Image (tube, rainbow, N blue to C red; front, side, top):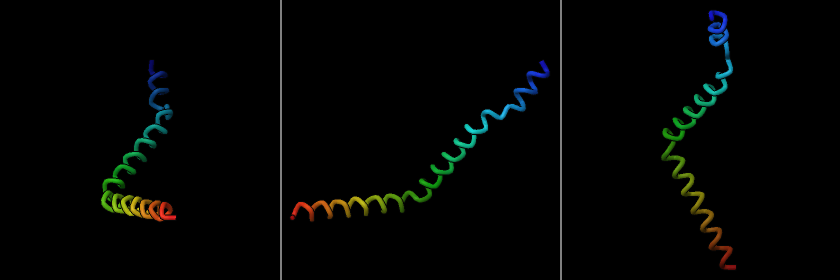
Length: 59
């Protein structure tokens, strides 16, 4: 029983999951912090694409 508990305690198989979860949390935090800048960037990109599509239609 003690040996099995030590095996469970020393098992590092779940460490990858914890690291992935921490990376996701950091990315979500960055998106929340820079939300306004990101939405402005996306809007500018869409406006540029729309204007480019309109100019292609004029040809």
